[in-house]
Amino acid sequence: MIVPILVAIVLRGSGHINAGFSFVMTCGGISGALSGSSGGFVAQYFGYFSCVYSFGQCSVAWVNCVEFFLGCF
Image 1: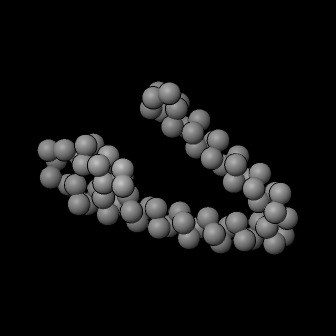
Image 2: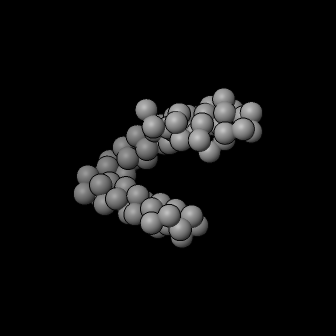
């Protein structure tokens, strides 16, 4: 529910709100598909603990990148 509002706020006045929203939703779909397939691969070959641990590390790395580049935290 918040994604359309954030896209509208960021792209206000540019005339590209629909293109920005479709890009964000496409990235969400691709990441959802890759998350399921890579999670299944890691869980099958390395176990569930490694799967949860590796996805946790990916999320921590993502938050650190956002914090570094945007400085919003």
